[in-house]
Amino acid sequence: MAKVKFSPKPHADVLLRVFDLPGRGMTRALAESILALDFPEGDAARIEELNVRANEGELTGEEEAEMEAYTNINDLLAYWQSKARRALQQPA
Image 1 (tube, rainbow, N blue to C red):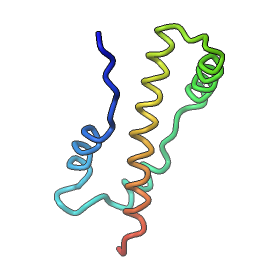
Image 2 (cartoon, rainbow, N blue to C red):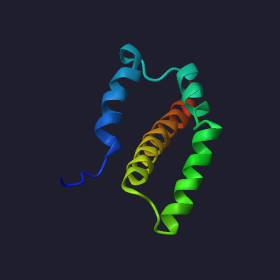
Image 3 (cartoon, rainbow, N blue to C red):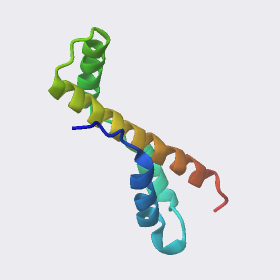
């Protein structure tokens, strides 16, 4: 099976329509909440562990899939945090 590179853009486009609360844009409260999101401590430790194993070339297929999932979620989170920062810079 061919590997498909995850692209956060289609997902982000759908979420943009969801978060564009009836045409008014992202609210300040939503933007602040998005900026507060981060991986829980256990997940952050697991990501670090997977990074070490990846750098050593020792990831199993299952670990590669797990790392890919973390990377995809991180990319999507970074995208939304960027949008949130921009929303907070807009005049109220």
